[in-house]
Length: 117
Image: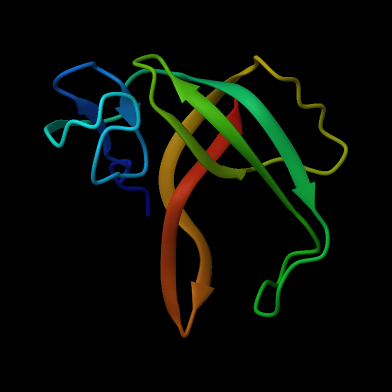
């Protein structure tokens, strides 16, 4: 079951810097006033890697994870749905969704899932 993307970034009201995850103070101007920003639009792949040595509890042989930048500037990391032989390139468009990334203690754990367009 897919849900609305559960990521919220925060824009500093003083200098407009985007922060994700939340910081108590702006990393640029030290202000404490923020407004919430939801990721919007498509997502562009900034970088990616494959992890082959997974911790206990993962049933997959490997995971492909990447960092994407949404059209409104929010950057976030998520799992990429690809086969090992599928080509990935920095700059390619990704379709973001919020869905189960694994099962822990019998419950779904939701996260950012990315799929090449």
